[in-house]
Image (cartoon, rainbow, N blue to C red; front, side, top):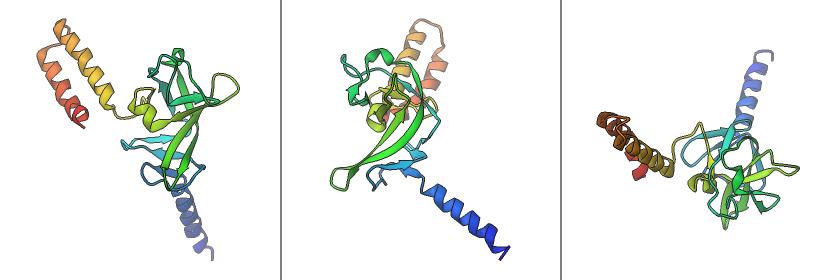
Length: 169
């Protein structure tokens, strides 16, 4: 019995950890909570990781980021926020979406439709892969540096070769 107990504990801890990860495209529960989220791009987000607010896609505020169902104001761009909660919402008919909650700018938490916010540049995962839009922006910045003769053609070509596959996705 003493030999079986460590094996049983290992099995239980492995199984319970596996159940705590949401994977993009494999969600099937409404209002489920997770400790980790494997994103569409393959990045792994965990509670406690820090995200950065990007640029609002509307002059009225962030379209995919809200606080108490109100768009977060564009002036919050650039602010850092640690992940507080990871939840899935939806149903079998419309599909499921992962929402990330971070500490808000007041009493209410800020809720982020992660995949749409990332796709539109409203949120930045500093530890994640570059999005297509981020890669294009970076390449434009490097082109400007090349035109100003701050970097060499070889340096620019190396960066361009690294970013081209991301841009073509």
